[in-house]
Amino acid sequence: MRCVIAHYHELALKGNNRDYFEQCLITNIRTALKDVGIRQVENLHSRIRIRLSPEAPAEMVQNRLMRICGIANFLPGRVVPLQLADPNLDALATAVLEEIESHSFTTFRVTARRADKRLTLTSMDVEKALGAAVCARTRKKVSLKNPDLTIYIELLSKEAFCSAKKIEGPGGMPVGVSGKVACLISGGIDSPVAAYRMVKRGCLASFIHFSGRPLVSRASEEKVHELVRHLTAFQYNSRLYVIPFGEIQREIVLSAPAPFRIVLYRRMMIRIAQELARKEQCWALVTGDSLGQVASQTPQNLCTIEEAAELPILRPLIGMDKREIIDEARRLGTYETSIEPDQDCCTLFVPPHPSTKTRLEDVHKVERLIDVSTLVKRGMEKAELTELSFPPPAA
Image (cartoon, rainbow, N blue to C red):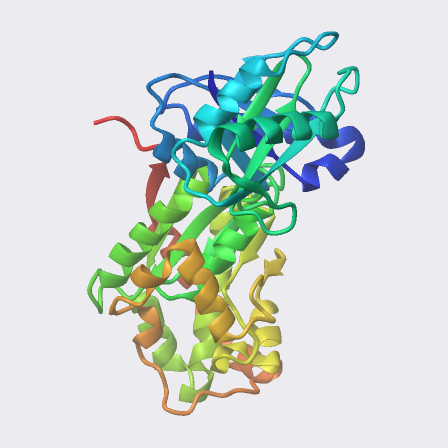
């Protein structure tokens, strides 16, 4: 029977809470694979077994599992019956030989793990027996250090599993175990990576985008919808709020000296995002700030902006440089979308020489000239909500 064995690392360290984390991971696996044909998802307390229907598309199953946070790695393969007291390895050897038929290799090794210690054969006994069977059939050589092919064997209580492929998962924690966060997302490179990092730590992300509309086009909104759609494949359900921010920016420009505008925009965004975060029952805000990257991300300006918040502000990228962020965006698959040209609120009314060391007392003086509460209320009232899900509903 075709199946997949999924392994996790971090969840095994959760002590008395381990069952809860494992159950969350199993729920997420069922959600991710609900439309591809699975028969059963079982918790074996050190690994998770996913039994597949014959019609389940192997490549799609693999792609889905590669996005499930909490999975360290997984092995697609097949299972055969196994007797604990009198194990006969003939059926397992046949399954191994069938599993490696499509692989081209010169050297190989067999790596066995014995989950049930009641099995009379040791892991080494199984490795030797199966290695001999492969040598006899293929005439290939064994290499324990640098093999072209590794054959993985999992010896379970009543079954043995074999695979010739180990695929890395994202690791981290199952989505949902760390509560909800509100991610401020632009059409750029950084914020989708920051959101993904929080999703990987078990958070369910709601997204908030500030658009320059009605003073610019919807280009940034279209990009953000595509980015959130991509990130939804990691967390299965997403809520995206788009805030038309152009008129609010214009109100700030009328009252604020040019050097302070960037900080004032960001403080207003934080206030509006915070109200939406409370509505979504989020415990923190998340931004894509990287220390010193732009004027709003200097130490002084970060502190001045954060003073407007009552919820914690998380900055997963704060110590990363731009090259590191770009590399992660490429791995994540958001980079190509992020670099498409657009117009967003960040390009509106930007002064030629923004302040990089904005004093809090100066900002407070300027904000007394602005009806902050009215602008926050306006932003909330004009917020547009889109809900996305993965897998997408059938047409």
